[in-house]
Amino acid sequence: MSQSDDTNGQVSSLGNPLFTATAPDEPEHLLILDTTLRDGEQSPGVALSAEDKLVIARQLARVRVDIIEAGFPFASPGDYAAVHAIAEQVEGPVIAGLSRCFEGDVRQCAKALEPAANARIHVFIGTSPTHRDSQLRMTQQQVYDRAVSMTALAKTFREDVEFSPMDASRTEPEYLADVVAGTIAAGATTINLPDTVGYATPDEWRGLIEWLRKRVPALDSVVLSVHCHNDLGLAVANSLASVRAGARQVETCVNGIGERAGNAALEEVAMATRLHPEVFGVATQLDHSHLYRTSRLVSQLTGMQVQPNKAVVGANAFAHHSGIHQDGVLKDRRTFEIMDASDVGAGSTLVLGKLSGRHALRNRLQQLGYNLDEEELKRAFVRFKDLADRKREVTDHDLEAVVADERRTGSEHYQLEHLQVSCGTRLRPTATVRMMLSDGLSYEAVAIGDGPIDAAYRAINSLCQVEGELEEFAVQAVTAGIDAIGEVNVRLRRDGTRATGHGADTDIIVAAAKAYVHALNRMKDGVVSGERPTPETVGSAAEAGR
Image (cartoon, rainbow, N blue to C red; front, side):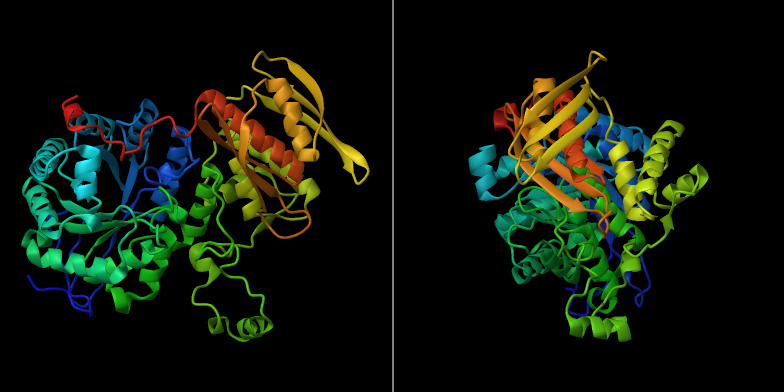
């Protein structure tokens, strides 16, 4: 097997049904597996409902990612239901489920994926000394045998099987090569190398991949994938170095979210490979015009805000403050921009106004990727008209905020009906709140607080008789201007569990109250983080047969 050089030699991966061979002078297909719904949901404080996951999965299908890792079916009934629903309802991408190397996990994963026309079972086990000795308490041979046998079992359910030696970057290279060779022989069509703790640097990670490709010739018959974490801020750099070394699948998360410091960001990998085909020699099938919208959707549903200076999709990504930069951009955008905002879907300026009708609203929402049923459209139209009365123009970003807010109604044990606050330099902040509770009756409460939002939250707590500790409170403007919609994301903790909430309104205090009530509803529903085990919560060797 010839080693790929700096000009990025062609790599044959005909053993994987997703891989399409290309002519020598054409870019090779780089597969994108997005794991926002699995690893992304492991971000601290994030908890997605099955409906949330389905919404994100449909958007990822619009982006045209190759594989959607929909979840970890064995982890909880909720995760199983979400994976099953996505497998049943989302068309286009391959739907993958994650499974530990336990027989029960593999069978549960296969069952959840049954409705999907194209599905993948992704099995993994820790292979580094730290994972073998401290977590699994298994020998090298035991881990090897388990990896091979569970890959073979997965193969009996699906032709498309991915195997990951977890913590590959800290695994002994020779042992890693043996495990990789063994699982390929057992039927794996994709071998994924995870830098699980984000420890690798680009040069050493590329060197390991190139060495492994020479050491295991069978890697040329499958797709080589990487899953890089961002603990040192190197996830994207390591992923791109992997492509230069011959990897033809990269695992990503929207906005780079995920366990601890997160994962390689989908939008950054997408644009880097698009802008530098001469460097990487690959091309994706992604629809880049949906990247910004996908970023916004994931931010809204997870409650994790995107920092303004975030590459590609941040609020400042296409903003220019310096006079020199502004002068240059006015003369020629290429002076200080390597991407156009419209390339990633961030440049739309289409607006609707108070004279726009329901048909115009439905049409624009469909263009934005939202397919609302009649009841959802009715509620959204009422919100739109109310907003149009307060704003001269309603932008796409405003519409996204409205739809996201409406879709958060769900089961409403607590409904905010009325909020009035009184505050000022010499006034004690006071809030009057009226809410409908689960018994169908409306109640009012008045409370004093340190500020108007604190007063509102105290009044809500007195009515709901549920008080959570406010861990995070974040507010941002959706658009520019004094009449901008404000979005608020909160995270509550109560009895060891956490729930996130989101609210949007031109009145930021109302948005804050909506977010708080939304979080309380999710907590009541049990849509919380911290309840289910993560894929890394692997039992002892004695538990393997369960």
